[in-house]
Image (cartoon, rainbow, N blue to C red; front, top):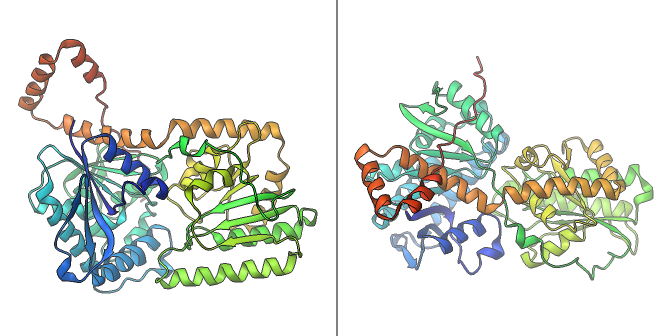
Length: 489
C-alpha cells in the first residue's frame, strides 16, 4: 500500500483532532490507519531564522510561519483575497501588491521542506486554498509523484474567479495536479465554465479537462462526517430557560459568509409576525471567533452584538431572553446533546463549500422524535440534503415563515424527512469521502503506468496467489469523469 502524504495549512495533534472535528477527524484517521505523513503549518509564529527546520513526531511533520508570512500569506492572500472571492465577496477582497508573492513564497518554502521526506511511490493529497501552488512548486523540485488537490470551500463563478489579478497563474497551478476534487457539481460547473471562458481550455471526450496543455481529472467528492460521533448520548439538560421552550440551534464560526445577521433578523421578524411564539422559542447561536485581526470579522461581531441586543431588548422578558449569543467555542463532546435537544437546526450561510454542522445536526437526532433542519440553498450540503427545509437566507420574511413551518411540523413528517436525510449522511460519511478520493487518485496512477510496470505488478499478484489477485483487481476503481457544464458564449 502506497504511503499517503497529507499536506494542509494546519496540522493538529492527533490526540486533539477528534475534538477539533470536521476535516481534522478524517485526516487523523488516515494517519492512524495506513502508511502516511501529515505535513503543514504547526500554528506557531516564529522569527524568520527559526522557520527553516521541520519538527517531526512520528507521522506528523510541522513547520512554523514567520510573522511576515502569517500576515501576508495567511491573513493576507489566503484570507483577504481567496476566501472572500471564492465566497462571492469581491467587495471586501484586498488585492494588495506583495500578498501574492508571499503566498507563492510560503508554498515554495513548504515544498522545499517536504521534498526530502518523499518516497518515489508516495501519493500526495494537498488540501485547500492556502496551498493551490503546492504541486507546481513540488514539480519544480523534480517530484513526479501523483498529486491530488481538494478544495474545501466553494469554487466561484468564472467571472468572479477572473477578477483575481493572478487568476491565470492560479489556474496554471491547478493544472499541475492530477486530480482536483470539489464539494459539489455546482462547483465543478463553475470550474469548467472558467476553463472554457477564462483560459480557453476544453473538456475531452473522455471527460478530462485540457488546460495549458495539461490533462486534469476533476470530480466532486462531497465531504461527510463521522456519524457515530453524533449518535451517542442523550439530550442537553440544565438550560436556564430550556423547560417548555423550543430551541433553535445555530453553530457557526464568526464569519461574514455564515449569514448570521440575516439569521438574527429572520428570528426577530418571526417573533414580530407570530407573537404567540414569544416565550415559547429561543435561538441559541454559538459563534466562536476566527481571524479576529481581519477588519471584516470585527465588523460582523459588532453587527451581531447590536442585533442580539436590539431583538432581546424589544422582545425579551425578565425570565425569557429570545437570543442566546455565545461568542466562544463549545466543547465538541456537548454538541451532540445540544443538537439532539433542539427542535430546529438553523444552518443558513450565504455561501458555504459544504457545511458539516447540517450533517452533524441530523446525525444527532432522536429517530423517534427528530428535529427539523432549516438549510440555506447556498450551502453545498443542500445538493445532497433535499429533505431539509431549504431557504434563501437573503429573504428574511420567507425564512421567518419557514421557522414557523418547522415548529408546527407533524411528528410523522419530521420522521419521514429525518429518515431520508440520515440515509444520505450515513452513505456519504467521512470514511466514504476519504476512500473515494484516494481510490480515484490511485486509479489514475494505475491507469498511467507503463506496460512494463503493469506486467511487473501482475506478476507480483500471481505470486501472491490467484484468489488474492482476483480480489485486488476487483477493487480497482475507474478514473472519475468530470461533470461539465455547457459552454457560455
